[in-house]
Image 1 (cartoon, rainbow, N blue to C red):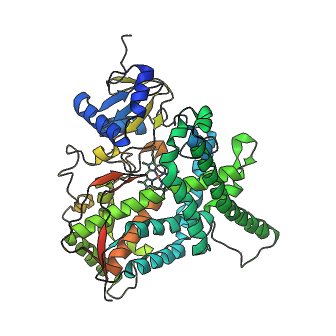
Image 2: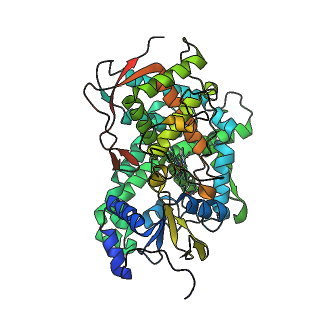
Image 3: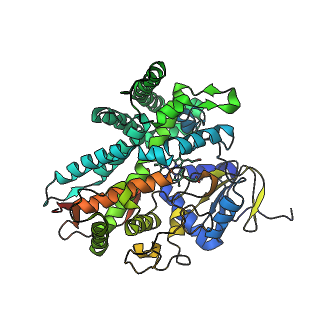
Length: 489
Ligand code: HEM
């Protein structure tokens, strides 16, 4: 027709095209999309399944799609079979179609456990987790280098588990949750084959299918008793007003109380609650802990940044403070700038979750057809030289008002991209990460205290290598190996 055309992309024969793509490594696909952008411009299309997959590398097109035409671009495509199983048929926030179920679940998360007063009620839990992390890091001694990634991941895991199941959990219970959840994530690549031809895949790849089912059962065995324990606490509370009962509301409490307004006010099933808990971990743990590792790696690589952080913290909390408290963070613009620079330079994910389009629409002069999927080049946007001066340098000052690195300016950067998108580590628009403020709090609190309590150094003669590797998130190819020296107070 004479109307706008589908964005340019490599020519493919429909079915054959899909087979070619399935055989490609994720990194190959990513670098291919990057070279297509270099050749064909900021909007390109791949023809992998029945509908085109459109990739966008331009900040202004991302803003036009996600903010100005947010309603059209806010849906999700049908989930792949294994995600369907884990999410109880797309009854999770990240996978649900953009309808009443998604709205209710998302609102329950943002107005419930992510409400600032609820987040504040977990301050004690955060202090406890920080103590565990510092003990683990100090244990190596001041002259032995250690890999810190596992310790960071465990700390973030503890934070999420406590917010999910209640802040009185014992470490033993946290470790049980971690064991089953990590097993599922680590084995995930083995199960990918089950996504193709799901009905006969169970028979053809019997071993993988049985193993997948076993991991799901293990997960139920650990999660369901924790969910039922919260249910029992709630029932006891309604029977007698027990002042000793738990008073910090956790995510599971909000899910147990939730009613689905469009479905006769029905309650969520245990399986749905379990899937939502899993999402609460999968969305948070690898993203937050890999961001923390990248940020600390840059602090080790650039001692002047570490010194500037330490000096600003000291000026606010005083020489003798045992720790940086959450209330102090509001008075510390430089740590905020370091976190933002970390997320710009090393966003945990190169792409967002795929968005589906609800009607034919035009973007950048091209047709984005109904049911087509759209995704955005998150990493490339944060490193675009047209938007960021010297984009590969790690310069937190760019996020300070006064821009001179003195830490005196207030942080005004709009991470939501509502006015203008300059980077989008948390996405933008209606599907933007609902927990971005929590993630920023965890990163700021942990980083500020890690620098306040410990001096970070590279192993003698070792360069901090910032090469990347794709795992669940983008991680350091050579994980950070650092020496930590407790600071005298
Ligand atoms: C540094 C940490 C984090 C990063 C970089 C991050 C990034 C993202 C991104 C890029 C998306 C997709 C946005 C889109 O498709 O438009 C997303 C969605 C989501 N994230 Fe996060 N996230 C982080 C932490 C968290 C945490 C702590 C939680 C839970 C407490 C969480 C829960 C979710 C959920 C539920 C969604 C789906 C939202 C929807 O579809 O409506 N994330 N996140």
